[in-house]
Length: 99
Image 1: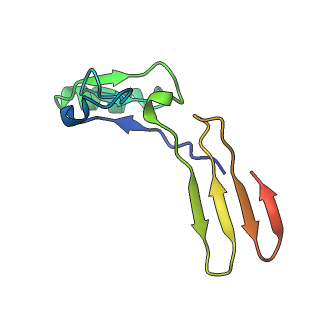
Image 2: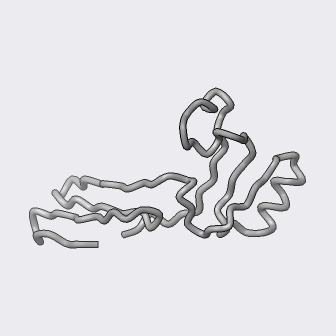
């Protein structure tokens, strides 16, 4: 599995002192390039200061991974294509599965 949903970010000016934070120099609404153009237009029309980032999967949005532990013992994991990490899932029924 991969965590591939489009991401957006709007950092508070209170985080402005965080080194490398997406909102360090601005507080506009940042969108990955995969968002629909009509949505971007609607957000701008509604008064949002929108910045579309050049990358479809931008490091600016951070990295995420996920783990789900199912009642039947299956553990599923997902990695983020924005990072160089990976994910491995373990099941008491079928061993290890590399994703």
